[in-house]
Image (cartoon, rainbow, N blue to C red; front, side, top):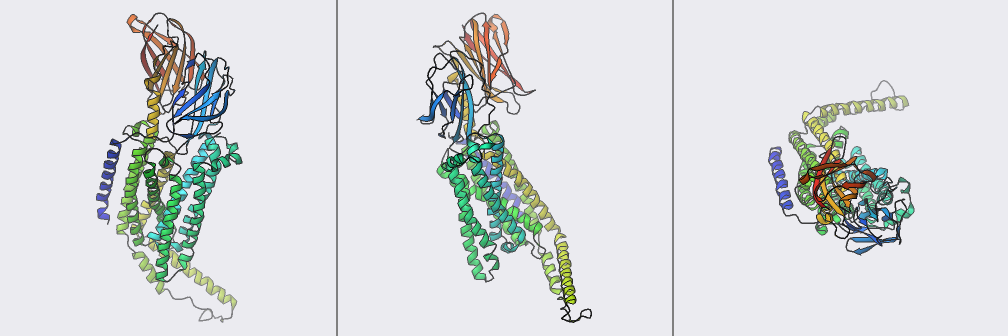
Length: 637
C-alpha cells in the first residue's frame, strides 16, 4: 500500500488545483458576513439642512435590535428616536430628532449578519458646517475586545472537542475495536465530550455580549441570554446541547456494554447499531455549525450546508482519529498494543477523509472567494492559503506515516505473548514456598507481592520490546508531528470561520471606491474625491476621501476621511494633503489637517489662489515606516 502513496498524493494535489481553478473561473456574485455598502447621509457629506433620518444599506439582510444604530451629536448625545426599521431589501433607517444643530454627527452601528457574525462600524456627516466632536469610538465594540477573544477561544475548544469526540469514536469502531477497553482512549473521547459541552455552554453565555455591547459585565445578563435564545445561533447552540445528551448515551454504551460483549454475533450487531447511531449524532452536531454560519447564507445555501457537514465529518475522522491513534501508540498498556492492522485501517480511513476534504474545500473556497485575486488581496484568502499549506504539510507527513505503517509488524506483540505464555503461574501460598503453611497471612501477602512484582517486570519487558521496534517508533514520531500540525490547522480554521469572506470584502471595497461619491456636486458646489491606497505594510489598504467646500478660489473647508476596505473608519497615524496647479507651476501647497475623530481630519481656510485643474495629493502613513501618496486631478473654481 505504501508504494501507491506518492501517486495518490500527486493525483490528490492535481485534483485540488483543477477543481479549484474550474470553480473560481466560473464564479458569480454572492455575499456573506454583511458589510456596509451605502448610507444616507453618506460618509463625510456636509448637508445644508438637517436630515429627518439616517439609512444604512448592507450587502445582505442583518438582524437589528433597539440600539443597533445610534446617531450622536457633537457632544456625544444620541439624537435618534425609536428603533431602526427595514425600509426596503437590505436598507434600514432610524428617525432623528427635529431641529438638529449645526456640527458633525457620528453614526455607529452594531448588527448581526445572516451568518451569525457581529458587524460594527461608524462614520460621520455634518449639518451646516463641520465641527469638533467628543465621540472617540473607544468603547467596547461587538465582536472585539476581551469578550471577542474569549468567544474565539470557545469556538476553538468546541471544534477541538467535536473532532476528538467524533473522530476518536470512529477510530475505535472502524479501526481498533479492542481500543474500546483501553482506559487512555476512553479518557480521550470522554474528554472531547466534556470540552464540547463546556464550550457550547460558554458560547451561549458569551453570545449576547459578543453581538451587542462587547462588555464582559454583560456576559451573565439574563435579558441578553433570552434574546440570544430567540436567534438562529442560539437555537443552533441549544440543539447542540440536546445532541450532546444523545452523544453521552452513545459513549456510555461504547465504553460499557460494548466492551463486555463476548459473543461475536451480538458484538457485530452492536457495532453496526453504534456505527449508524454515531453517524447520525455526529452529523447532527456538525449541522449545528452549518445552520448558523457561513454555509447558511450567500450562494447556494441548500447545497453549501450539507457540503459543510461532510467537510466537518471528514475533518473529525482524519484529525480526531489521528489523535486517538497517537494516544493509543503512546498510552496503550503493553499488553494491549495497537495492532498494525488497526493502523492500516486508519490509513485508509484518513485517505478517504482527505479526498472528501479536497472536494468540499474546493467548493467552499469558490463560495467564499469567487476570484483568484481574493487569495492575496483579502484576509480570508490569506488565511485560506495558510490552511491549504498546512493541509499539504499534513498530507506529506501522513505519507511518511503510511511508510512506517507498511513496515510495521506484530513481531514484538507475538513475541511478548509467547513469553507471557511461558511465564510460570504464581506459586500458591503454602505450595512449596519458604516454609509457611496455607493459612499463614504473612505468606499470602508475600506471595501476592511477588505476583505483582513479576507482572510489573513482565509488562516492562514487553514495553521495552515493543518500543524497540524501529518501525513502531518511527510511526509514533510521525503521528506526533501530524498532531502538532493539526493543532495549528485547527486554529487557522477557527480564525477563518470568524473572518469576513473574500467576496464580501472585495464588494465592500468596490463600493467604497466607486465613482458614485466622486466628483463635483452641482447643488452645493462641494467637491469629493475618493482615492484607494496601499502602503504595502500590514493592514495598509484603504480608501481616503477628500471633501472640499465650496471648491472655489479663496478659502475652503477641507475634510479628509480614511476608511478600511470594509468601510470602517481607519485611524492612521498621519495624513497630509497638498495642492498643485501644474499648468501654472503653482505648488505644491501643503495642508496639515487636524485630527477630529476616528478616521476624520479637517482643515479650515484652505486657500487656493486661482482656478484651474488642480492635482490633489494625499499622503497616508499607516505605521512608522509604511506610507503611500495617492492623487487625483479636479477642476476647482
